[in-house]
Image (cartoon, rainbow, N blue to C red; front, side):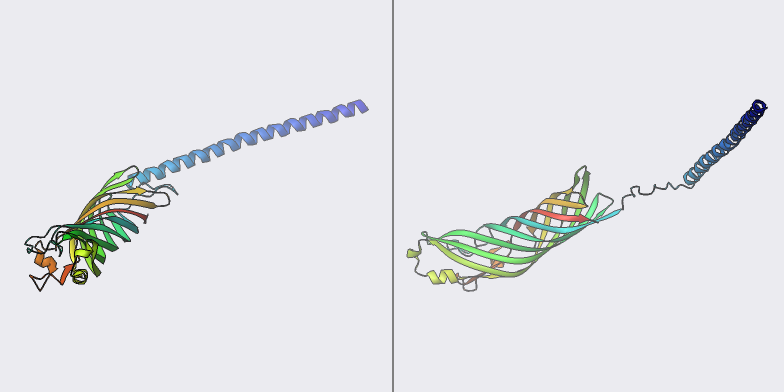
Length: 290
Protein backbone atom coordinates (compact mmCIF):
# COMPACT_ATOMS: atom_id res chain seq x y z
CA UNK A 1 0.00 0.00 0.00
CA UNK A 2 2.76 2.30 0.95
CA UNK A 3 4.84 1.25 -2.06
CA UNK A 4 2.01 1.87 -4.48
CA UNK A 5 1.30 5.25 -2.94
CA UNK A 6 4.98 6.27 -3.28
CA UNK A 7 5.01 5.11 -6.91
CA UNK A 8 1.92 7.17 -7.70
CA UNK A 9 3.46 10.20 -6.05
CA UNK A 10 6.74 9.82 -7.97
CA UNK A 11 4.85 9.42 -11.25
CA UNK A 12 2.90 12.62 -10.53
CA UNK A 13 6.13 14.60 -9.80
CA UNK A 14 7.79 13.34 -13.00
CA UNK A 15 4.70 14.24 -15.04
CA UNK A 16 4.69 17.76 -13.52
CA UNK A 17 8.42 18.31 -14.29
CA UNK A 18 7.97 17.14 -17.89
CA UNK A 19 5.02 19.46 -18.32
CA UNK A 20 6.96 22.43 -16.87
CA UNK A 21 9.97 21.81 -19.11
CA UNK A 22 7.72 21.59 -22.17
CA UNK A 23 6.05 24.92 -21.33
CA UNK A 24 9.42 26.73 -20.84
CA UNK A 25 10.73 25.39 -24.15
CA UNK A 26 7.65 26.66 -25.94
CA UNK A 27 7.98 30.10 -24.31
CA UNK A 28 11.67 30.34 -25.31
CA UNK A 29 10.87 29.33 -28.88
CA UNK A 30 8.18 32.00 -29.06
CA UNK A 31 10.30 34.79 -27.44
CA UNK A 32 13.56 34.40 -29.46
CA UNK A 33 12.08 35.15 -32.89
CA UNK A 34 10.45 38.26 -31.45
CA UNK A 35 13.78 39.66 -30.28
CA UNK A 36 15.38 38.76 -33.59
CA UNK A 37 12.58 40.53 -35.37
CA UNK A 38 13.28 43.66 -33.27
CA UNK A 39 16.98 43.55 -34.11
CA UNK A 40 16.25 43.11 -37.78
CA UNK A 41 13.75 45.97 -37.65
CA UNK A 42 16.28 48.26 -35.97
CA UNK A 43 18.88 47.39 -38.60
CA UNK A 44 16.45 48.12 -41.39
CA UNK A 45 15.49 51.40 -39.71
CA UNK A 46 19.20 52.42 -39.46
CA UNK A 47 19.71 51.62 -43.11
CA UNK A 48 16.68 53.70 -43.95
CA UNK A 49 17.98 56.69 -41.96
CA UNK A 50 21.41 56.42 -43.59
CA UNK A 51 19.87 56.20 -47.02
CA UNK A 52 17.73 59.24 -46.29
CA UNK A 53 20.81 61.18 -45.18
CA UNK A 54 22.67 60.21 -48.34
CA UNK A 55 19.70 61.12 -50.52
CA UNK A 56 19.39 64.52 -48.83
CA UNK A 57 23.09 65.24 -49.55
CA UNK A 58 23.97 65.58 -45.86
CA UNK A 59 26.43 63.30 -44.09
CA UNK A 60 26.21 63.79 -40.36
CA UNK A 61 29.41 63.58 -38.31
CA UNK A 62 29.26 61.16 -35.38
CA UNK A 63 29.04 62.77 -31.97
CA UNK A 64 32.55 63.86 -30.91
CA UNK A 65 33.83 63.65 -34.50
CA UNK A 66 36.21 66.24 -36.06
CA UNK A 67 34.56 69.32 -37.53
CA UNK A 68 35.43 70.59 -40.97
CA UNK A 69 38.17 73.25 -41.11
CA UNK A 70 36.90 76.82 -41.02
CA UNK A 71 37.67 78.90 -44.14
CA UNK A 72 39.17 81.61 -41.88
CA UNK A 73 41.69 80.79 -39.16
CA UNK A 74 42.89 83.39 -36.64
CA UNK A 75 46.20 83.38 -34.79
CA UNK A 76 47.56 85.98 -32.37
CA UNK A 77 50.51 86.35 -30.05
CA UNK A 78 53.83 88.13 -29.51
CA UNK A 79 57.07 88.34 -31.50
CA UNK A 80 60.59 89.54 -30.78
CA UNK A 81 63.10 90.73 -33.39
CA UNK A 82 66.82 91.42 -33.60
CA UNK A 83 69.13 92.25 -36.49
CA UNK A 84 71.03 94.94 -38.34
CA UNK A 85 70.43 98.38 -39.86
CA UNK A 86 72.00 100.01 -42.92
CA UNK A 87 72.37 103.67 -43.88
CA UNK A 88 73.42 103.93 -47.52
CA UNK A 89 75.98 106.45 -48.78
CA UNK A 90 74.10 109.63 -49.78
CA UNK A 91 74.59 111.38 -53.07
CA UNK A 92 75.66 115.01 -53.64
CA UNK A 93 77.79 115.28 -50.48
CA UNK A 94 79.70 118.54 -49.89
CA UNK A 95 83.50 118.46 -49.92
CA UNK A 96 85.97 119.45 -47.24
CA UNK A 97 84.50 117.93 -44.07
CA UNK A 98 86.53 114.71 -43.78
CA UNK A 99 83.43 112.52 -43.74
CA UNK A 100 81.73 113.93 -40.62
CA UNK A 101 78.04 114.60 -41.06
CA UNK A 102 76.94 111.08 -42.09
CA UNK A 103 78.43 111.56 -45.53
CA UNK A 104 79.11 107.86 -45.96
CA UNK A 105 77.43 104.56 -45.23
CA UNK A 106 76.61 103.55 -41.64
CA UNK A 107 75.43 100.40 -39.91
CA UNK A 108 74.24 99.24 -36.54
CA UNK A 109 72.13 96.94 -34.42
CA UNK A 110 68.37 96.90 -33.98
CA UNK A 111 65.88 95.02 -31.85
CA UNK A 112 62.21 95.14 -31.01
CA UNK A 113 59.13 93.29 -29.84
CA UNK A 114 55.37 93.50 -30.00
CA UNK A 115 52.05 91.85 -30.77
CA UNK A 116 50.71 90.32 -33.96
CA UNK A 117 47.37 89.06 -35.26
CA UNK A 118 47.00 86.99 -38.40
CA UNK A 119 43.99 85.88 -40.45
CA UNK A 120 44.43 82.88 -42.77
CA UNK A 121 41.96 82.35 -45.60
CA UNK A 122 41.39 78.86 -47.04
CA UNK A 123 44.84 77.80 -45.76
CA UNK A 124 46.87 79.46 -48.52
CA UNK A 125 46.44 83.24 -48.20
CA UNK A 126 46.63 85.44 -45.12
CA UNK A 127 46.97 88.95 -43.74
CA UNK A 128 49.11 89.92 -40.74
CA UNK A 129 49.02 93.11 -38.69
CA UNK A 130 51.79 93.90 -36.16
CA UNK A 131 52.26 96.58 -33.53
CA UNK A 132 55.98 96.69 -32.66
CA UNK A 133 58.39 98.72 -30.57
CA UNK A 134 61.81 99.15 -32.23
CA UNK A 135 65.19 100.46 -31.09
CA UNK A 136 67.79 101.11 -33.81
CA UNK A 137 71.37 102.36 -33.87
CA UNK A 138 73.37 103.84 -36.75
CA UNK A 139 77.07 104.51 -36.29
CA UNK A 140 80.09 105.46 -38.38
CA UNK A 141 83.80 105.47 -37.59
CA UNK A 142 85.40 108.56 -39.16
CA UNK A 143 88.99 109.80 -39.33
CA UNK A 144 88.83 113.58 -38.85
CA UNK A 145 91.74 115.79 -39.97
CA UNK A 146 93.55 112.56 -40.92
CA UNK A 147 94.51 111.77 -37.29
CA UNK A 148 91.45 112.01 -34.99
CA UNK A 149 89.13 108.99 -34.67
CA UNK A 150 85.47 109.90 -34.15
CA UNK A 151 82.41 107.68 -33.88
CA UNK A 152 79.20 109.27 -35.15
CA UNK A 153 76.09 107.69 -33.69
CA UNK A 154 72.31 108.12 -33.84
CA UNK A 155 69.89 106.06 -31.72
CA UNK A 156 66.19 106.06 -32.57
CA UNK A 157 63.13 104.64 -30.82
CA UNK A 158 59.99 104.07 -32.85
CA UNK A 159 56.65 102.32 -33.24
CA UNK A 160 56.36 100.13 -36.33
CA UNK A 161 53.12 98.91 -37.91
CA UNK A 162 53.58 96.32 -40.70
CA UNK A 163 50.60 95.17 -42.79
CA UNK A 164 51.71 92.02 -44.58
CA UNK A 165 50.05 89.96 -47.30
CA UNK A 166 51.09 86.33 -46.81
CA UNK A 167 51.08 83.19 -48.91
CA UNK A 168 51.14 79.82 -47.11
CA UNK A 169 52.29 76.32 -47.97
CA UNK A 170 50.97 73.78 -45.43
CA UNK A 171 53.53 71.19 -44.30
CA UNK A 172 53.14 68.32 -41.80
CA UNK A 173 54.71 70.32 -38.95
CA UNK A 174 53.13 73.73 -39.64
CA UNK A 175 53.08 76.34 -42.41
CA UNK A 176 55.75 77.87 -44.63
CA UNK A 177 55.09 81.47 -45.62
CA UNK A 178 56.29 84.26 -47.88
CA UNK A 179 55.06 87.81 -47.26
CA UNK A 180 55.27 91.40 -48.47
CA UNK A 181 53.64 94.66 -47.52
CA UNK A 182 54.05 98.23 -46.23
CA UNK A 183 55.49 99.00 -42.80
CA UNK A 184 54.84 102.39 -41.24
CA UNK A 185 57.58 103.66 -38.90
CA UNK A 186 56.68 106.42 -36.46
CA UNK A 187 59.74 107.51 -34.41
CA UNK A 188 59.32 108.77 -30.87
CA UNK A 189 62.88 109.93 -30.15
CA UNK A 190 66.34 110.31 -31.71
CA UNK A 191 69.58 110.67 -29.71
CA UNK A 192 72.91 111.64 -31.40
CA UNK A 193 76.52 111.55 -30.20
CA UNK A 194 80.03 112.20 -31.51
CA UNK A 195 82.58 110.23 -29.49
CA UNK A 196 86.31 110.88 -29.88
CA UNK A 197 87.92 107.42 -29.79
CA UNK A 198 91.51 108.34 -30.69
CA UNK A 199 93.88 111.27 -31.27
CA UNK A 200 92.01 113.63 -28.97
CA UNK A 201 95.27 115.50 -28.28
CA UNK A 202 95.32 116.67 -31.89
CA UNK A 203 91.80 118.06 -31.77
CA UNK A 204 91.66 121.80 -31.08
CA UNK A 205 87.85 122.07 -31.30
CA UNK A 206 86.85 118.93 -29.35
CA UNK A 207 83.81 120.52 -27.72
CA UNK A 208 82.54 121.78 -31.04
CA UNK A 209 82.92 118.37 -32.63
CA UNK A 210 81.27 116.46 -29.75
CA UNK A 211 78.36 118.88 -29.46
CA UNK A 212 78.07 119.59 -33.15
CA UNK A 213 75.76 116.66 -34.01
CA UNK A 214 72.02 116.74 -33.52
CA UNK A 215 69.25 114.35 -34.57
CA UNK A 216 65.63 114.69 -35.63
CA UNK A 217 62.76 112.24 -35.91
CA UNK A 218 61.31 111.54 -39.32
CA UNK A 219 58.56 109.10 -40.25
CA UNK A 220 59.26 106.40 -42.81
CA UNK A 221 57.32 104.04 -45.01
CA UNK A 222 59.14 100.76 -45.53
CA UNK A 223 58.52 97.91 -47.95
CA UNK A 224 58.85 94.77 -45.83
CA UNK A 225 59.32 91.30 -47.30
CA UNK A 226 60.49 87.96 -46.05
CA UNK A 227 60.00 84.26 -45.41
CA UNK A 228 58.80 82.43 -42.35
CA UNK A 229 57.77 79.16 -40.76
CA UNK A 230 55.03 78.66 -38.16
CA UNK A 231 55.57 75.45 -36.18
CA UNK A 232 52.35 73.99 -34.78
CA UNK A 233 52.60 73.06 -31.09
CA UNK A 234 50.18 71.23 -28.78
CA UNK A 235 47.28 73.07 -27.12
CA UNK A 236 46.72 75.19 -30.27
CA UNK A 237 50.02 77.04 -29.78
CA UNK A 238 52.37 78.00 -32.61
CA UNK A 239 56.01 79.08 -32.86
CA UNK A 240 56.55 81.58 -35.73
CA UNK A 241 60.13 82.00 -36.99
CA UNK A 242 60.83 84.51 -39.77
CA UNK A 243 63.43 86.58 -41.56
CA UNK A 244 62.46 90.11 -42.67
CA UNK A 245 64.09 92.74 -44.87
CA UNK A 246 62.68 96.27 -45.08
CA UNK A 247 63.56 98.94 -47.65
CA UNK A 248 62.87 102.59 -46.85
CA UNK A 249 60.69 104.00 -49.62
CA UNK A 250 60.50 107.52 -48.18
CA UNK A 251 64.18 108.31 -47.58
CA UNK A 252 65.76 110.64 -50.13
CA UNK A 253 69.11 109.69 -51.65
CA UNK A 254 70.78 113.13 -51.56
CA UNK A 255 72.73 114.25 -48.49
CA UNK A 256 70.91 117.58 -48.08
CA UNK A 257 67.61 115.73 -47.58
CA UNK A 258 69.10 113.48 -44.90
CA UNK A 259 71.28 116.00 -43.06
CA UNK A 260 70.50 119.63 -42.28
CA UNK A 261 73.65 121.81 -42.11
CA UNK A 262 72.52 125.45 -42.39
CA UNK A 263 76.00 126.97 -41.87
CA UNK A 264 77.84 125.33 -44.76
CA UNK A 265 80.66 125.44 -45.64
CA UNK A 266 81.03 125.25 -41.84
CA UNK A 267 79.57 121.85 -40.96
CA UNK A 268 78.75 122.40 -37.29
CA UNK A 269 76.09 122.16 -36.09
CA UNK A 270 74.38 119.55 -38.30
CA UNK A 271 71.19 117.55 -37.77
CA UNK A 272 70.81 113.94 -38.97
CA UNK A 273 67.33 112.55 -39.69
CA UNK A 274 66.97 109.24 -37.83
CA UNK A 275 66.07 106.96 -40.73
CA UNK A 276 67.43 103.59 -41.79
CA UNK A 277 67.81 102.79 -45.48
CA UNK A 278 67.48 99.04 -44.86
CA UNK A 279 66.48 96.92 -41.86
CA UNK A 280 67.15 93.20 -41.48
CA UNK A 281 65.44 91.30 -38.68
CA UNK A 282 65.24 87.72 -37.44
CA UNK A 283 62.05 87.16 -35.48
CA UNK A 284 60.75 84.48 -33.11
CA UNK A 285 57.39 84.44 -31.37
CA UNK A 286 54.67 82.48 -29.61
CA UNK A 287 51.05 82.52 -30.69
CA UNK A 288 47.69 80.88 -30.19
CA UNK A 289 45.44 79.51 -32.94
CA UNK A 290 41.77 80.31 -32.34
